[in-house]
Amino acid sequence: MSSKQIMFSGFSGGDLLVQVICLLVLIGLCLFVFKKYPLQVTIQNIVFAAMFVLLASVMNALSVMIPFFGVPSVKLSFVILVLIVAGSSLSPSWAYLVGLVFDLVGLLIVPTDQPFLGFTLSHVLVTLLPSLWYVKSQSMEPKLAFRIIYTVLICLGVGAAVYIFQMDEIQVGQDVVAITTVMKLSIVLFISVAIVVLFVVLRYMQKNQKEDTAAAFAKWMMIAIVGEVLYSIILTPLWLDVMYHIPWFVSMFIRVVKACVMIPIDIVVGFSLVKLVHKVSFASKQK
Image (cartoon, rainbow, N blue to C red; front, side, top):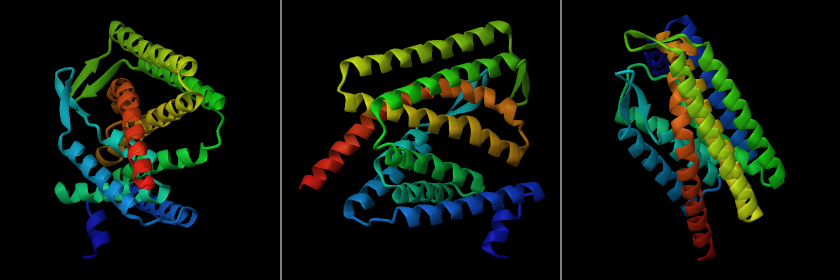
């Protein structure tokens, strides 16, 4: 039996189709990235890429399940933060490799009978998109960057509120938990406060920081939000639906709450890490 047959043997026809689509997307991204952004092999790039793969693997090993409604159902991890920082610090070709190698290392550390290429695609995308964003946004005016992030925050807040008020119950483990009006209002209030805080921070950066620093913060906030939403709220529930037939719309509820906690952490911690990496990179180039 070939390696591809082994990879796909545990999946039904529909699941196999998703695997094939993910494989084709990965190949297409590979061809596009390495043609448009040729790989520049330097000691610094190799060291940074290896460091990010190692750090992401360590964060993955240190991930913990935290209880939600009394059942351990939410995985708390800083893997996505590390991958987004990696993408923000490396060229698109190296970012693609970091996401891919991290996924392969994870499979070697924790072998599985049915490796799913959807998660491989998720890791590649969440690392590659920040790199492409930073390349394309180099010439973006600071005012435009702030307009974009303000619009994104408003859309996310409204979308999350509408989604939460539509939910009447969710499945946590084997139990079905009713979502009361008080719970809905509490979650929406928490989301609203988080968004207001982010607005205040953005306004502070605009008025009190240099234009370049404020714009860099807005761009980082944008990619941190998009990365967390893409991975946690969109792709992961989609792959769980494909693999285990857990309804995407239902499983997304817990992840919306998790994202509201993780996004502010990603923004604050991640921006500091990005600045540190860029300083180290600049210092090494000066030598």
